Amino acid sequence: MSDTSRGPAIRNVSDTARWVAFYRAMETERKDAIFHDPYARKLAGARGEEIVNTLRGGKRQAWAMIVRTALLDDMLLRTIADQGIDLVVNLAAGLDTRPYRLALPAALQWVEVDLPEMIAYKTEMLGSETPHCRVERMALDLADDAARRELFARLDASARRALVITEGLLAYLSEEHVGKLARDLHECQHFQYWLTDIASPKVKQMMEKHWGKELRAAGAPIQFAPEVGEEFFRPFGWESIEFRGFFQASREFNRPVPGDWMIRLWAKLMPRRTAKMMKLWRSGATLLRRA
Image (spheres, rainbow, N blue to C red):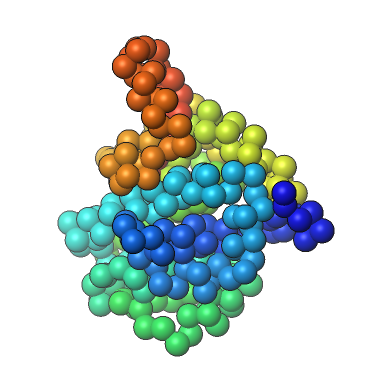
């Protein structure tokens, strides 16, 4: 039973970054880890561990965040290498440590954008560490339309071929605000690729069931889960050129969904019905290209 005297499991939107960082720490400390983030436990701190231990199904649902991290790592590294990316813009970067833990080109410029308190905390915690590429952090509220567009224009002018990451961000935005962001990114001619995760309405429903109350209280309700999936971005000038589902990847990485044995059994007994059900749960990572 959790200790309710500690207060809410998630107190603000910055807590979600500590929450996810602790999942990376959990994976890193496994003997068969599919990635290593030696900074994750330090960044998550006691608060991150408390969140995972307090939230309903906190540890049981770790597979999704772990698989998401591994998928985006792979898609990011391949795109940088294959497409000659010279700038990565990580929006709502949170406590992501990819510039420190991945083998990135030394000449790559990596820009992290987040709220001032998150930028300050991360800068303090990683101040003595050396990244593999050039890292710059910028404090900005992405909800500020004018400031966001000004920043994008400035970054666009500094790049030849840029990739944008919005890991774990879009789910907290309305469709209207995701559309605005997509439009603003497309206005930047050197922003050629966009790597993000996307959930289905069914997955949103599940997240609401587990964590909706806590996330709404923290001012971070789950909102974005379009019926059309990655096709949502096409009218804004972005086409999906790669999609990798979290469920399939969970089997590839041997981080199965809780109850996967039952899903396998259903697939044998009722293949059509199971396939239809899995379409409803379709969520994953997608790489978008400027159309």
